[in-house]
Length: 174
Image 1 (tube, one colour):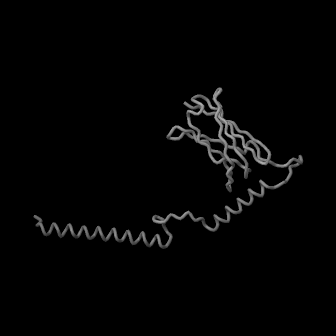
Image 2 (cartoon, one colour):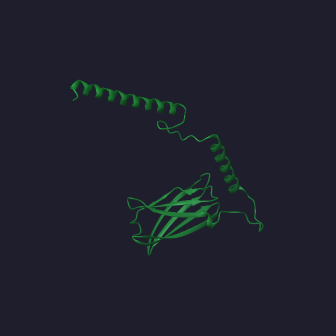
Image 3 (cartoon, rainbow, N blue to C red):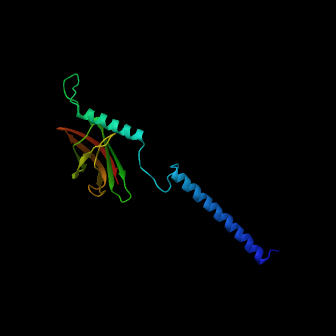
């Protein structure tokens, strides 16, 4: 049968071993942080040199393409096409509908969102936000009760460099 003192001695030994293990883990984590092996404490969002160079090259290429005054074989100047507009919708927890866009070959301009459901019409405008890989409209959040339930016809018109392209999708809202 264990005595009270031997029980305390065993408990103290276990506590010391536990403390040493925790200390060893803390030291290991500290060494890994200092050597930039892990980023538990400091999560840098710093891009590598290669990533920075790639982003700069992509940005430059896209801007050169957009700004170029090259002409096609027919002699007309190139401009963004309807197929270069992408729309998607997502219902948020609060019931609102978020509409996201991807615009290829647009560097500036304005976006006009029009939603129709029967005679109800809802409109929002936003500017084009230039990004290295694709541009986007600054964002649209539509209250689900803006034009009621039913089938929404969602149209996005993008106006850039004197040209207008419009993409339309449908969304069933219950």
